[in-house]
Amino acid sequence: MKGKMTGSSIANSRMAARALTAIVGGYAAAAGSVSLLARIAPIDRAEATIWAMTLSFLVYAGLLLWAFHETRLARVAATIWGLAFGSAACLWLLGPAL
Amino acid sequence: MSKAALNDAPGVRQSMAWIHGWLGLLAGWILFAMFLTGTASYFRPEITRWMQPEIDLRPVTAATAADTAVAHLQKVAPTAEQWFISLPDARTTATRIFIRERPNPDPNAKPAPRRPELRLAPATGEEVTARDTRGGEHFYRFHFQLQIPHPWGRWLAGLCAMAMLTAIISGVITHKRIFVDFFTLRWSKGQRSWLDAHNASAVIALPFHAMITYTGLITLVAMYMPWPIQANYKDPATFETAVFGAEPDAEASGRLAALTPVAPLIARASKEWGGGTPATMVVRNPNDAAATVTLFQNSRDRLNARGGSIVFSGVDGRQLSTSPPPGPAAETSGVMLGLHTGSFAGPVLRWTYFLLGLAGTAMVGTGLMLWTVKRKRPNAVPFFGIGLAERLNVGAIACLPAGMAAFLLANRLLPATLQSRGDTEVSIMFWTWFGLAALACLRPIRRAWTETLAVAAVAFLALPLVNAFTTDRGLFRSFVHGDWLFVAFDLAMLATGALLGFAAWRAAQISSRPARSRRAAARPANPLREAVDAP
Image (cartoon, rainbow over the protein chains, first blue to last red):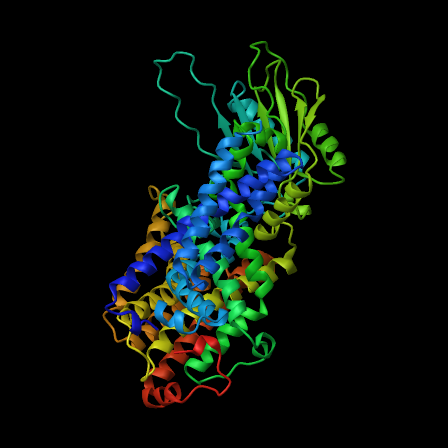
């Protein structure tokens, strides 16, 4: 399973970048996107907050799997980190509702 | 499969198989321990009762237990700041009380030492003393804290649960013959058998595994995913109030006033909850004009584990406030919590939960076995960590049960008055677990399996014997007296011992016939190849 990768430090560092993007970036992107949804959803604040928290792990799991399935690392990194920083920026501009 | 190989064959099934294999391996050993101790925790109060055989109480009504507890507290701490009273039910027979003292107004005074939690006989309100033990609470805490300092244990458990969730999803995508494999189990076929066993244990209880993993993450969601709260509220307390209702005003007035009788409050709360019973009673500022009594609903009779609460005046018994009715999201997350803990489950459903939990444990265990067996095939690409992975498999699958049995044996064999006895029991579990795993490293791998499994089997089989010799609640006497908790516990230990003994016997068979099993393993796999078989 790992034979082809042995000795290839480029492949190793690409795998490390992918894993970091998936695990850390995926968490940030999931947290940011569900928080943004919770902030802008046109329903009761507390309800929107709980829905976002409840569904967040499904979003995170989806991002994790996609990060390892998509072969183009640049695309993975751009999407996941873009989602993380983009949603964080929107939330910062909006500020807390209550 | 490397990244390069991923590029060659970027099919969803291949990439999912690759993720499934690696996530399963890296998180597998901890997940095995979480599944096994979590499964045992479905009998948390029962294990605690078995571990304190001197306590043999008869259940009483919540109102009686509350009355006797309040009478006791009026004697020992009439001017405390708060009384916490955990009322007994059919499963936890003792009342538990905890007193929070009023802080000394003098800022230079030393803070009063924290009072320990006490247990009372619910019928009389008298204090019950028994051997010091963590009881079933130990397995329960370990299954999400992993005996690692806060908050790191919970974070590690959460990371492993996330790996489990991802492994379940990728496992389902990988698996194309999900219904055929449900009925397929080929014994004595080396790797093929482990794959069949992994598939069977995974598929039989797939909805349970997915549910228990997701709801497990939900139990600690406020720690793992607090960001939606941060996005919506300047102060998280506002969110708590909106969902769970406001905490009563905690300031004491300083004027004395007699505490209202609590039994009528329980009757009124029960009426409001449609027959539900309270699990916890919190009395703030007892015997003060500003006293309040808060009742929290028991989740035993309902799917939503977050029951409501009602605040009463502690002076005249007026109803002051009620927790808001849950909206759809709060209801959903409360039900998820209830599904995880299974607190609503009666005996039959509880045993079903237990067996499904064992199926989950078996799924993780067989997955770990499959991982190493596959990489030991003569034509497999050598993997440098294979020896380590095999040793960790022995350490998790065979040595953890031995450690759990040692924990229970220590409970019966340590002197009742030993200093910090409860902590010693816990230490003995870990010394046995890791000590046995270390000793097993000195033996050839196949012998290590047989020997550690045999040690675990003997330890479990010894439990009913040791129980019969050290208490007056042995299997025979319990049976005659109709003490079904102790009968069931001893029988469960015998069954566990027999299962581990069978596993040891199988391991011995395989190790005494290495040529045959190697040939079986080397045989080309079934023509119906799974993506997980891809080299």
